Length: 471
Image 1 (cartoon, rainbow, N blue to C red):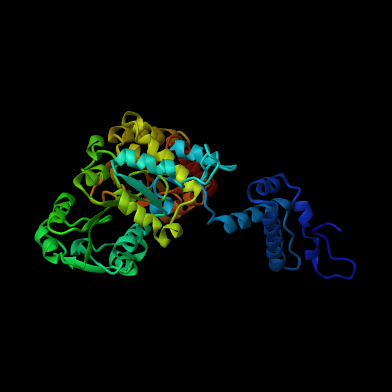
Image 2 (image 1 turned 45 degrees about the vertical axis):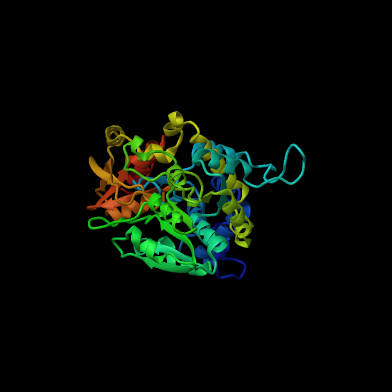
């Protein structure tokens, strides 16, 4: 019986003539899917696709050909796997995009991670063969770079803050400015963190103005620490005042108290050197006399998600002994990626060329304009149903870093003769690799600042594929 002939053998269901699973599995395009996604997943997708055809079948209709079945299987697999973690092209202009994994790992760190397909020296002393120290080299690099006596790492900076307060301030008061009682992404609120640590928050000053005398008047025998918190993703401007870390350290002359500085994004270099606004460095905080400083590993450090704690050796030892320290410690992947990222800061002369985050932050607008013009010229040559223009725009650091600092950039603004901007942006996200854009004034914006080397070609191919397939 052919697949489109009348039913035989007493049956009345032509659907029995559907292509069998084993025949679909022999198709070269299906074999490619198996190589990428695994045989069990593809077999399930074939069964699901055939079931869809079976349910949709109407008497007298032709059964689907192999090409139609294969295309449906491909869509089932892609739909099933669309949320898998995979590389994307960041064309948004938001450098530390939380939804896209924040900092792009330096090639050196990524290469090191690729080497971990075997056992590693995570916690062994190679010389003696006995148990060694976790994160030993990463901590050494941190003390060398920051001038701190000791260091440790946790899984993120929110965890670092909770751990510090839990280890040093439980049952004691923590003085903090009203203007620094922050809430960041994911509804993380500093007052909640202080409460969970067992400490007692003592807010001083007002939302926009806090003076040194406000801290001084709050000092008492119950005070465990003074906490300065970086406002992260916002800034209070205008009639505003805050107290520097050096001034807070000066209060230790009046009463012995721990000064904790949560610097947030964690600059290790002078940002003004790269044409960016001044950002307090970790080194400056340590030099000013802060007892404990904590910051993120995946913002201006440009490494993996991590919380970094540096400071006085006696306090770091107390923090490491707290039960939370084990719960919040990092795995070998984070440790190695952070170590390799930190090594880049040992040579500031080569830092920019090897550090993707800093390179994007410091990118020359004139170079970005030329980049956009080259991409437009290549796409124009394809004569696609697209309207393109190069225009000046603004990028942003993102990730709670430098929130009030727009970065001049140049973008390729795209409009389709066929699709709305929302639809075009959606089709680009469905590309492989997905191209993530933003929309402004009914145009799809492709920002040159966040395109890595070679990604202009990927954007070009994606636009060509989308325009030709859908026109």
